[in-house]
Amino acid sequence: MIAATAIAVSVFLAFQVASELLDSELRDNAENQLRADSRVLATTVERTGLAQVQLPPYPGSGRLVRVILPDGSTRTPAGQPALPPVSGHAWRVAQGASADLMESNDSDDDGYLIYTLRVGDGAVQVARNSDDSPVNQFGLGMLLIGLLCVAGGALVGRTVARTGLAPIDRLTAAAVRVAQTRDIDADIPDEGGGEIRRLIQSINDMLAALRDSRRAQRLLAEDAAHELKTPLTSLRLNVELLIRLDRRGTLDSALPADSRTRLLNDLGAQVAELSTLAAELTDLARGDVSDESTELLDVADVVVAAATRARSRVPDIEVALDVTTVWVSGRPAALQRAVLNLIDNASKWSPAEQPVQVRLRAEGASAVLEVDDAGPGIDAADVPRVFDRFYRAESARALPGSGLGLSIVQRVVDAHAGQVTVTRSARGGALLRIILPAAAPPARLTQLTAGADTVTAAGP
Image 1: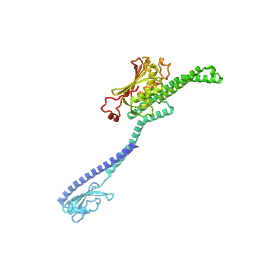
Image 2: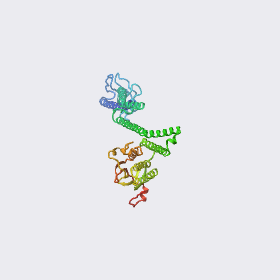
Image 3: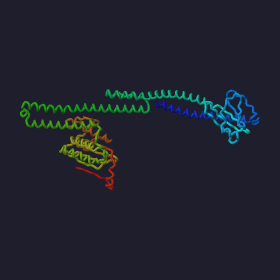
């Protein structure tokens, strides 16, 4: 419809312009011809006189002539149709009061274009019918051509529109099919061109991301079910044992005080392990989705807060801090959780007499955090998988934990555009290093510390 309307408007405007040009050209030609014919007639009249000039009979078509005599009477050829009465302007030309005159008379069906030229004491007039038939025929032809163009434009526009929108129709059908079947495994055929091709490619990329997300969720659910099975089974068996003994009334006799205490301690440890596992699973299931906003923060404050929490959770742990003020743009709670997981992981391996060492420094445009212990270290075979979910080295399976702590660290660091690595420390244990992009300190702090070399913060 838009194409047909545009063509119709274009044809109408072209018809108007062309008709005006054609009419003007025809009128100019007719006027020039009348002037030429009147000069020929005037030459003849000058030789013979107005009253004596011989006017040949009217041939039946073509020009019409008339001689205006000084007394106001007129002469016309025999058989010629009557012309309109001599106008006042033409009479003034015959009297010499005005120059030659071109006038038209379109008051009736027989309109004339009349040219008046003074000759002697009178004037001669040459006239032609004002014939609009050429313009009318041209207009009819333009109308027919315009109708054909409009019909052709509508047909072509519909064909182009349907062809161009066919991939969109198929894309819509594919999207509806995905919404109805929840099947995101099949890609949408890559067809079309330009914007449509880019749209289809973008939707295929989105479907691929959804497939990866669903696969990750499935793996997480399967791994979580596997990891939850053992502590839940142990917890259920211990609780069932207590219930069975209590129902029989043999709880005190079957379980001495020390055995009962050990069993209750095991139950408490298993509940605590399940609570930790549930919290870590929640963090992993949330992925990068977080309501916590990004802000400019001092990593030293984050490290000190994480060390304080680690000491409150495990009073026997000793954490040695060597931190320097380094500013980054990040999420404080997420970074604190990552640092806390590193400290918890190191505390499992570091001997009681050896502290966990935590160092923070600035290196170029990066903030570098290192956590090392004096334990046995990580075997080279385990290094590639140490950050995988639920992965636990052979030597770590007897220790408490779920194998999710370092996975959370990896996710937090990735969300902050950083990197985390594991190597062997100088004390023989594991050295885990986090590198984050540093940020410029706040303007107010820069003004307060102008002239100072460094600003450091350390905690025991």
